[in-house]
Length: 178
Image 1 (cartoon, rainbow, N blue to C red):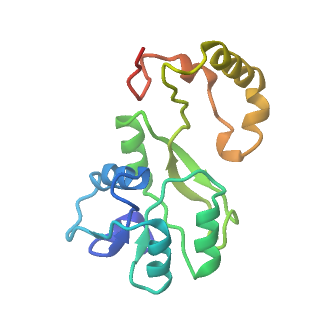
Image 2: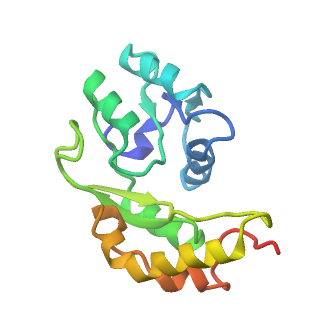
């Protein structure tokens, strides 16, 4: 498996059925026309690591923040390769779904990344309910905006956080509730 389309007919795991990995996999797979649909084994992450390292699963599909301890565990438990999404599929995904944006996993981030890897990321969001103290939430958001530059330097994948996105109600991905 050298590129994502090579999972055609393979056995994969996209995590538990209602996980973000499973949801993302279902969105991405719709960009492809597989001759034989990959067999998706919907199991927990620990079991998928065991099966992957034992050769019973050909690929694990994950949507996680990096660096990630589970990805590090997999990368250090068995021989792996990271597989990029094809550029045309990335462009198609980010233009049709505002929940995703293009990113690069840098060479050497984990064992198995021997070159830059094109991928997509899902922005982090903060969701609260009506029980949240409004003053505390305002203080948190104010501190975040005041310190966003320090936050973006904490991890290279956060370098392009745009604080205006948080207030952009036209492009907000999730419905807002009052």
